Length: 334
Image 1 (cartoon, rainbow, N blue to C red):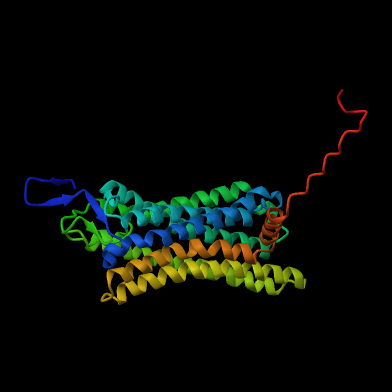
Image 2 (cartoon, rainbow, N blue to C red):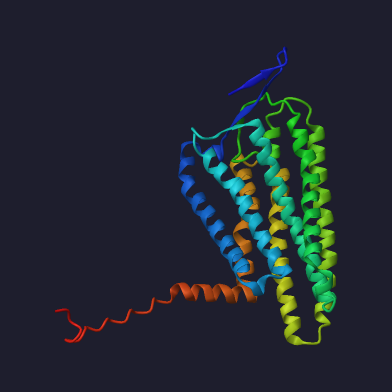
């Protein structure tokens, strides 16, 4: 544990111990196997759908490419959280420096906000595809898609950077033990010994403003999309449009409901144990990563068909080798 002093009694820790689920004490090591299994399932499921989209040229369209990007972000979130979580169950590998802690905090929040911004881009894509189908190929180009994703990344950075920047200015002198499996903002702020009212205000304001604005934009987009879908004369096209929107809305509900429920319970159930709060954090961070590939893999017809073909190929037995005929007596060597 390293510290620095400014010449007075004020001391700030510059390295910490992550203790995920502290109430379990020595039993924490037993959590490594289930969370390792969860990590492998998340990576495998998301990678399988991504591989399907990349390998099939017929799926090289904006909607499927955005789905693949969303699932790639899911893998990044799981990779940012779960290895550190498993290390936090150990008493030997749970050390983390303040710069690494702040970097992990930035990555977690950036990926979460970027995930939500991709959902906004997907809503815009579906809005143009269903409301202006004849102009869709000319409007939604690769250049437009790249520009929107660049704006989404910039917006994510602008939202997260002030929160992490303010956290880097805080002195941490209460303890060097973070009772969490990751460098979550409020878990780290509990160790501060100065005035963090600005940090709390900025963090809460950014979260509320971001969520409310996103919900308004998504609500406006999908209300127009559903209204336009019901006006499609072809029953088959209408059913396909509504099914696609249903998949996106189910993912949106999973992402935002898990995040909002965690925030509400964190502020209302203050008497709950730290393990309960940590479990809710794991719930809102990892549930979308686990559920999203199954939603898109099962509900998106084109992806489902290619996945079924892929599984059929892996299950087909190899063709039996033809037995070699014995050489005739004329071909036998003398």
